[in-house]
Image 1 (cartoon, rainbow over the protein chains, first blue to last red):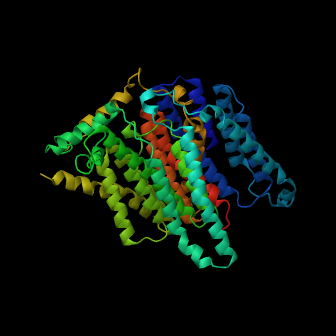
Image 2: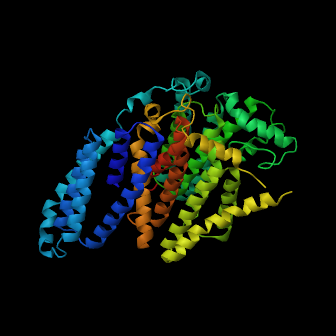
Image 3: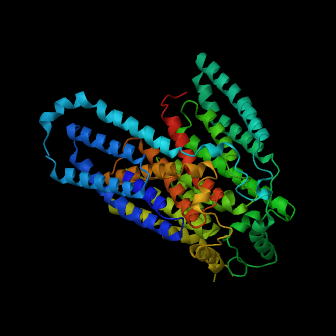
Length: 409
Length: 119
């Protein structure tokens, strides 16, 4: 994994930003990742017990990672990768298979790889967080002024912090009080409603700012929608750069006025839905853990405020673009232990909604659905082949909705 | 029959280099927001979880964490990685924010889970 990082970093350092550099990056990852994965698997097969070899190799790996974070040229990074992969290969194929006599001394030296791991983690974080400072102002000069007019400001930050405190503090105090008097059942029963209440309040808070729009970006949606309302059939008479996702604006002309501001409001609702789905995913995975609700509530607000500009201005970048696949992700995250027929049916339904939504959501949904199915099947005890067949089944399953769509006159 | 022709034209447009006067490049993008400043974290988190999922898939048992959590985090990582594909062709800050949402979700889940203690 480190080899892949180092190569990608080196290519971007060596080459100017270009399509050729991007192609080189992905091509090199396609080569380096399988090699590194093969070596890692072979090592995990060989190393049955912890011994001096394990400690030595861990220290070597962490040392290389730490050194690489200080590299300043692509040549040195490539050299480090070469040294690492060659050393790993040599030690893998020429290592003595039985070092049982040395295992007793392992406990005396365990602090060395642990120290190396701490040092490499510190070096890695230093590198990852380099140039973080520019983030701490709103980067509203990177795009046109129109897009940032209604972007985040200090007032919204303060409002968000106040609302978060108002929501979270009573919840925490109530939970502590109920816990002190031994009423754990009430805490259990209140958990889900509190998450929903928090999500609703956060959503309301985020809707408050006035939506902004850049009409040129909205024309790709409003135009096809206008033709659709005049009787055109999508993908036959009506085309959009973004597939069928313009149908998200169907409320225009019915529930809302047919104008840009109303379209921006729809975009706003889709964007907020993305964050609330993220909140639901966190609840699904960690809802019973301590501090999960306050941490998640703050997370949702912070993510919204960390956007480079008000995402309502350009509709094709967030919720309108990817909400179906994001909801599918949530459903799949929920459907990991209990494989009920109803849950699978909902997943297939969402897979088809994503397939119809646009070409790219189709691709993403098939990848997510297929890989999830393979992993669930395999961890349930299925064979490799059966798991792979279940993954590939995502392709025909995703075409059901499109088939029905095509069958329409 | 339905036609995706106009949709595919956008892919072709950006594949051919896009509009050099309007499109962002990675060097400009890298200074624009938090998601791009920590792009290395994208690679680290997504690759680590997918690699863990692949290893678990090959071995037939969940490694290092309960199966339910591993499957959930892997699904998020795959979503983030797949959504990032569009960013390769059209690297705008807002699309990077889109591909960062699964990353944020994964990190917040891990930070909560690592506390281990239940309410």
